[in-house]
Image: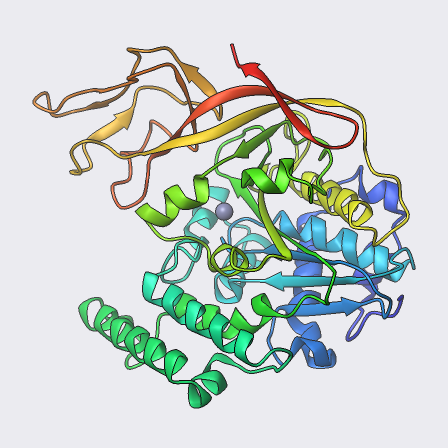
Length: 439
Ligand SMILES: [Zn+2]
């Protein structure tokens, strides 16, 4: 497999012909990141397996093997996914991919259009660009009625294996999908009646439209006896240690295929998915993939958004490295994978953290970097209303994803996640062993 479909511009060709070792060392410039985005956005026109879905590109080696799916731009102010996609495209272009399939999915296209316009065309400050995180709602927190459509669509796909259908086509043939879709339409109309959005009268909010469009791409069958790994790429507003978010079985179980991701020191092993599902809903890709025995999903928080001069490694390079390593781990390339035993920090999610009074009066007492350990009794949040109680650690635990103390804690979404912190060792077989509680 070496020919890429569609328009390969001279600027893109320059990236694709960069030696792989250099791609692992030198972060893509913002203009190069944009070039990768444009290619993946538009290649569907020339690529039949993309089924006419913009921002979806499947590259099939034509030989048996596993599938690696790289998903990015679920939050459209987080461009590091372009590093992973550049690595995958360069591997294909340079003839290093020997088997299996690579699937690229760019999620929030409308949000990304606004984001890139701000970043590349008008060079607004980063604070301004963070406003382009989504169009109408956080695409990583789906309305639960959309989850119902996904459940029904999943049942439909299992009843008709190997057949391709859009959600609308499935609804025309299946009562379950049709009913779930009608309920979702009614909900979306109500949302738009309550909060009218110019240009969207009588339609659905953008993220809902896009997730329905992407659903068949998320669900594509994995060949019998093969596996699929989905990596969803994210970055953070503040500098922080890159981390891998996954369920326990993915990183420790017999199907463990992740080895060390360079620059990714910490792992969140956990019931995090269930926790967020209860509170706010979950990413659609994880919701869908959790039903499929041959598919594993992880998310990687690669570091700070757009960080080109991070302490250890820019987020776009962490993403590139993870794609390099995973392609080797899945047997798509013959490159050696990192296999040295490594120490990792394991964060097991215990509780999502919300302020006790949801009036927007609470702030964190300081900036808590990911993994900061709080001793029992530590006050970590206070309200400017003296009648409201402070927020106190009820036992020794860690905190991740805390919002900054400059802004009031959010009330609609969790302000942080409390975690138990363990030390672990990843042995030479790539398995994870817990060696004790972190100090
Ligand atoms: Zn994100």
